[in-house]
Amino acid sequence: HVAGSPESPVGDFSFGVANGKIEEIPFESGAVKGSFTKNQVHLEDAILNTKPGIYSATGDVGIGADDPMHVKVSVDNARAESLVKPFSDVPITGWVSGNAWISGTRNDPVVDGEAVLREGSFYGELISELSVKASLRNQIWDVERISLSGYDSEVHGKGRIVGDQLDF
Image 1 (cartoon, helix red, strand yellow):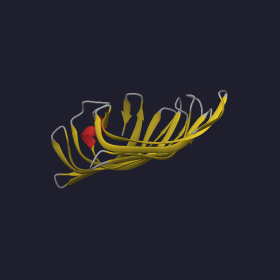
Image 2 (spheres, rainbow, N blue to C red; image 1 turned 60 degrees about the vertical axis):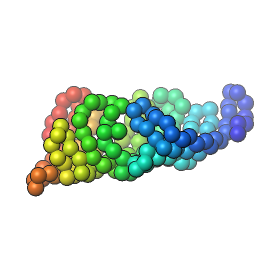
Image 3 (tube, rainbow, N blue to C red; image 1 turned 135 degrees about the horizontal axis):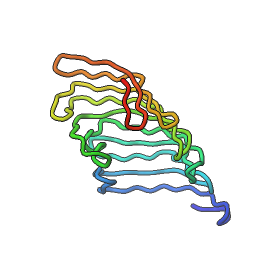
Image 4 (cartoon, rainbow, N blue to C red; image 1 turned 45 degrees about the horizontal axis):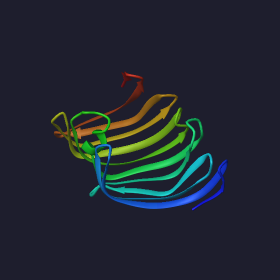
């Protein structure tokens, strides 16, 4: 449904999809319900079922790159290799769950998130669990907590990523 004028449209939408692929992530079903104005899209609910993983998003996204956004993105029980494949060829496997809260603008995003990878591997080395809690502000990633367990060992740390420079 669309109302208003061409200069100031408002409306709502709802649609579903089945058996497709976004980038390299195949999915079984998806659905989106929301509304829009001239400057903003409101996602009441967006769900992508990759069976067994589920991706979801809710919130508001500005149309322009400098318009504000406030979105919560979640992933539940998705395969790490599917998540990473569109961005990198890093050999990682496992089950991933997590949440991210994204605000700011697309040009200057602010992110607070946490994720857990279970029963996986990284470059062939087994990982029992890898958990991360991090935030992004002013293009700088602050890793508040990172914990890795595998082979009856644990490693814990924190640090910062600025561009391609690591400080942990």
